Image (cartoon, helix red, strand yellow):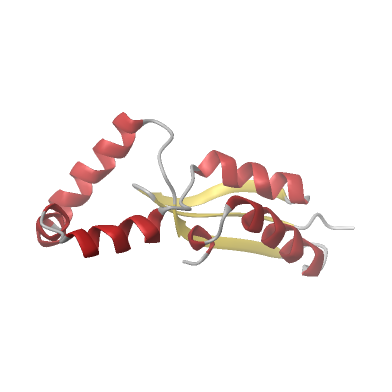
Amino acid sequence: MCVHHLPDERKQGLFAEIFERLVPGGWYLNYDPVRAEDPVVEAAWQRTSDLYDPETASRRRHRTPEEQARWENHVRYIIPLAQQLGYLRSAGFAGVDVYWKQLGNVIYGGCHPAA
């Protein structure tokens, strides 16, 4: 739960650094939130999440301006999943896939191809 805090250029650089340090056959998996590419999907994720946790939904609807600013700062670098999978492929990873997903939270990754 850290890659979503990084700007895109740093995400790409981090994935390349991780790839360079993995032994052939080694895996990198990341658990992080992602943004939906389609606003309709994003809204569906939000409605579903609100059903699971109505208290959080209520807090979100009643944020102070300061709380809203903190939230916007927190989520500003969250990007769509497809973009991050592309970054992994560009870094050289194979077997890039989504290995678990629940709404906007995913485990995705890939491996350093065996020599």
